[in-house]
Length: 427
Picture 1 (cartoon, rainbow, N blue to C red):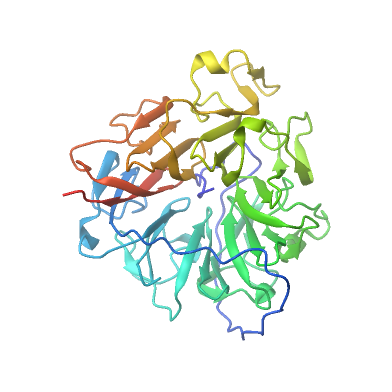
Picture 2 (picture 1 turned 90 degrees about the vertical axis):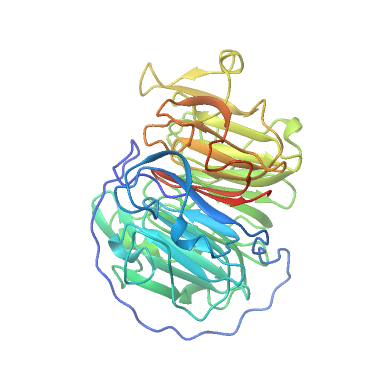
């Protein structure tokens, strides 16, 4: 899950302001356990950055207002990148060497550096990263050695929540001491919570946890305890993902578990509004082997090894990518509103080429396909799906435009109100 919109969505979140601090952390020796998972690999196909959506806070990295189709960031046209990542109102790009560039909103130290925000600028740190993830105002970066860095802050329902039990904000990448003895192999974030997967298949969570997204109950008397990184009882995990306010994990026996906010059955086909611990999600056998999971504000997305995409949860903003003839026999009315509906079971998104990567925004989805095409669908009030207008797209729509030309879509990144694409020229 990429970052959500800064304006509070229907889940119990409020926007707030934060402060900063930067202590030093010493590295510890890694614990040695059975290795089930390898550290994720940095993408290798290089390309150039295109963007679309709103640009109120410089999140497009270009001059001017919003763009309804992808346009290039010309200031870095001579630099090769291999990955792009979007948060709430900010973004990152990674070079083939593992360096990071950031741009967008400067609130809460989210850019990981000082200086100008309206174009990509390198974060000066002597580390080599393989993966970066971004929430609303919290970011994490994983090194090739399995070390975790994090910066920014978490936000809560009552305002500023904090970066850690002792820091309100962190404005530059900081080695995460709580996991310094672990080899971390993968990371993900929701709007205001974080997940980290270890080499031995254990899952750690921390951040803001009022909606159950941490997989544990948080004491109302000690709410900051949620900022302490703790392992879940779930073992043998191989894949992780997160929606805005829910979390996802797939075990080595191909079982999907979910927990957190469940008001649109984005976790489980249950009327329980919150799922406080990892709960097995029954799936159709047709899904087969799962290779990726992600989530939006109130829905979940699954990708199988054939590159097929399945969705479930809230569907009234076109975020599921399903045509009406598929929706009609499956949908359930929401108790929140007569205009809202739910698809309670994972359902295949039709008419979509096999995908190589997905990225999920609050209420829209981007895909990079194996054939080099890109597709998007969902709610489009911010022009983030890049279809050339502000109309929603209920089913997958191919990304195109004179600026893209015949370029291949290599990577995609869905932000709160904007999108970032990595493209490779075919000329």
